[in-house]
Length: 212
Image 1: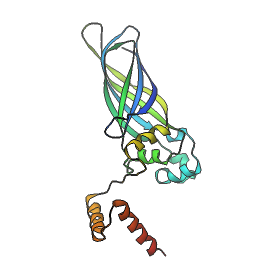
Image 2: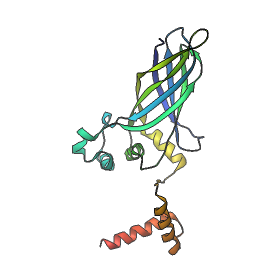
Image 3: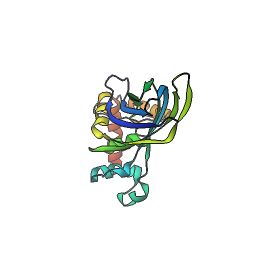
Image 4: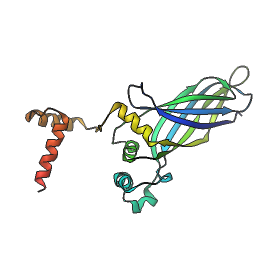
């Protein structure tokens, strides 16, 4: 049975991707002398929020995810970030390869809300690996990548922020159902508002007047 080990040597934003994309650099090591013809690799990535501290502004922004700070001993649970697959080309001994992770700025997604709440420091991530390896000096032997293979990595928050700024500079993003979008469009049209920003600002101004 081939023994595999994994390391994450860094992560960067892909400046040429059509949408927000992170690229994790992986180092994969196999049993010395074993020929790996190909590796069908799966990776689940989780955020482990309990592995870092938070200032008051970050704690306030994370209230909708984890509740008040006094409850964090019970609520600061791992958050699912991504589940991706890649094909690693053949190698003997060791190889470095990229793991491409498409991302979203949809604030209905817990991981996106978590990243948005952070002002600096690092994001504690856990990469969990599995998959199928095709090995052998001649012909193919099919072997599983054991489920217990995992790597902790601390991604700088600025990498996420730079990635988002490439695609949504100075902006946020909200997903709405069709009926709500139709109602907003009708409201905008009735008032001849020039943009969605003006539409939302008009609604907020109306709400503020109602609370006086």
